[in-house]
Image (tube, rainbow, N blue to C red; front, side, top):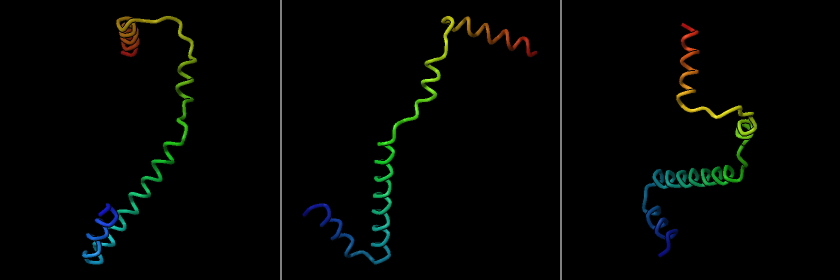
Length: 78
């Protein structure tokens, strides 16, 4: 017995309201599968990544240098 026949055997002995619930569940799964396929075919938006990669970098700074710069700005605000 294949999976469709097994499902059919279970559903045919269910009360009608439960069988309809199974049918609705199947519809949800099919809808989600269609949405997933659509999302996979969409190309990701890489505008922000391109923008960041094209920013001019004057020099590389260590974490300590960055922290010192932030601390200087904090000190100015106080």
